[in-house]
Length: 112
Image (spheres, helix red, strand yellow):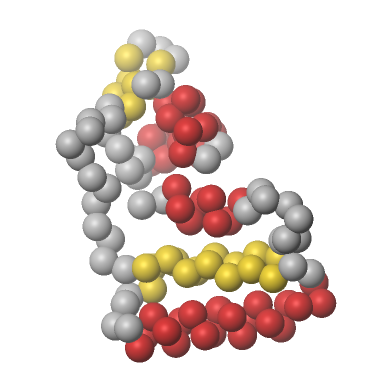
């Protein structure tokens, strides 16, 4: 599968996937074939590497609820600490409940 198709299937921008490839941080093996083609190797037997932590996501519907967002994030961090989990990443956003496009949630789920 080429890099662009893989990126779109994962919900990330192709430019981001290309940047990850250049930096060597792409979460799947890939190799350059020719001057413009990058092939991503997806094996059914491989699983994502374990990072040893959790990603937290919090969302509120409007800018009026921004203080609630900070409270939600603090509660999630407290839960992770109580559960003995290492927090690797925290994503929070203000997004309407009517719009299903959660950019930061998709980014968090796409990044193993």
